[in-house]
Each structure stands twice: as structure tokens, then as C-alpha cells.
Length: 274
View (cartoon, rainbow, N blue to C red):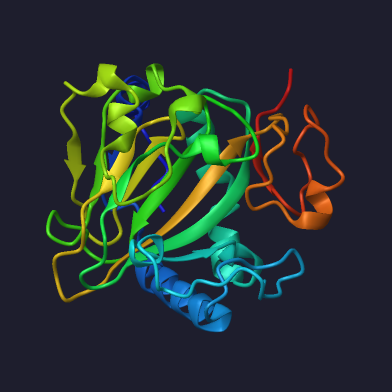
């Protein structure tokens, strides 16, 4: 993977709330990632989430019958069942790059997920990521890796620049058929110009957890597959929301507890403390 970034790229990310890196996957990494994702999805079947011990959560099923299920095929925490995916997202070089972008001293995996728009799949409404999660942070981020060419026609990512600077956790909305609900709930954004991010397979986008983003419908007969991973700055604390935390772990937590369980959220990188 290409993890060498420039100061200009860091400043662009921090100003705009997103950054696209071309040719992020190197050598045979694209084929290895595609294979790892395919094998993991096949193993999980209709289950959306893996368990802490690498099992399949049979109580969390994607049936594919409602609007959200047809936005994308979604499978979470593949790192628990696939060594290549785990090694990739826990690579300290990746962790350092993400810390440099976010301006933090340590980074943990929150969760990975593959998001795959089926042929003719529904649009992904504008939303923020971090308000869904079990911690509140203005420095969390996600990496979005294109496994197929992501185009305007098949549902590439769109970003709303600089929204991470004014976003509020309480004004986030669910992904629904009302694609623009987030914008109307944040009226100061209605005049902003959205930026499309077409990517070749192997490119990636990185966005702040408070940057507004979405994707159009897949208007083609082919799949648009992506592998993503959300990252949590080290030292973040529990906000009371379960999100995808295992039930047994969730029940041990109280608001304000530090989320530092390495079995749940592996530490990817930590700067040396002076």
C-alpha cells in the first residue's frame, strides 16, 4: 500500500475533510484484497457481522428485502475471519499515515466493512459516520478502497467539503429514501457544491467521520465493490450507544469508559511518548 503522503495532502485532508489517494494498492494487493473479501462474504452468508471469536452472528441477518438492504451488500468485521484483511488494516505504516492525517497520536480499528452496490442498487443518502458509533470524535476517519472502478454511473463516493468543521452529532440522519435529509437538517450546507470522487480499482478515499458523504444509485448491470475500515483515535470514551459492540462487552461499559479493548478494537499505531 502507498502510505507516503505529503504535507500538502495532510493539509488538504484537514481543510476539506477528505482525500483521494490514487494507486493506493500496490502490486498484487488488489487481487489479494478482492479474493479475501469474496471468501469472507461467502463464509458469512447472510450474516452481517462476525463475532469476537471469529464466528458468525446469526442474529444479525441481511435479508435484502427493504430499501437499506438494497443500498449495498454490507458485511462487517471481516478482519476477524481473514488474515490478509487483518494484517492489512493493522499495518503500523497505515496507522501512522492515518494519525498524520487526523493529527492524533494513536489509532484503533473501529470496524471494517465491505460495501458492495449490486447492479441497479439504491443510492446511499447523505450521512455522517461518527454519530452512529459508540464514541464521539471529530478526528475519527474511514478509508474507502475501490475494488472495482467506481464511476459516476455505478455509484462512486461524493463528499461535501469542509462539513466536518460545522457538523453536529445530533443532526445526523439515517440512510433512507430521503437522500438529502442530512442537508435539510443542516441548512447552512444547502449552498455547498458536492464533489464526486470517481476512483479506479485500487484507489482509495479517506474521509473524516464528521464529513458529509453519500453515493448515487448503481445505474449499471455490474457490481461496485468497496472495502472500507473505520478508525477510532486511541483514548476515545464510550458514549452509551452500542452500535456494533458485542453484547457481553457492551454490558460491562458505562459512559466515559475508555474503549481500549484490543480484542474488540485493535491498536494499529501509537506514537512514542517523550
